[in-house]
Length: 199
Image 1 (cartoon, rainbow, N blue to C red):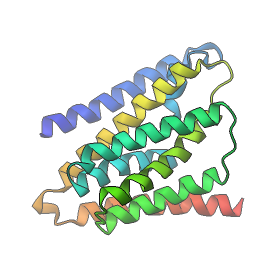
Image 2 (image 1 turned 180 degrees about the horizontal axis):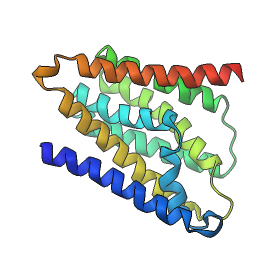
Image 3 (image 1 turned 60 degrees about the vertical axis):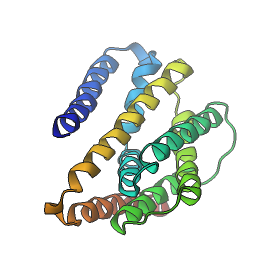
Image 4 (image 1 turned 90 degrees about the vertical axis):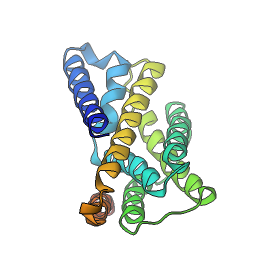
């Protein structure tokens, strides 16, 4: 299992580095795939929630382990379509920041909600994250390639969250590692929310 976790981390890092290199050599960011790959990792408000969804799904256990990431991805794509077509959605940044706070608290407090509750919670958060991706589509980028790019990176981040949760499940951590991850995600979400409210 440790080899698998290392492979996931290596895949994320190599994919990010490769795409960042390619993006630096694109005229005006015309290749939407690279723009899509980079967008989720350009802000910690997105990164921590995507990591958190994978982490929380693993924490709850099967079938949430795979259902919650799939729900997040599907709802995020729906939100992206709304954003690309300019459909109105309000308080997007506030909900995104709040999603970080909530996801961190779920993890830190070891909240294991049933699917009928955890699915809509994750779906709502994902809808707003996807909308933010959609409205920030570069003008020269191909929408389908852009969506493909951020979908792949989102999937990798959620997989990384699953791998991290698996590492921290070991008895030697005694739940401390999980609580630390949850608290850090909550703090990051809180910082983004306070920055929005004060701006």
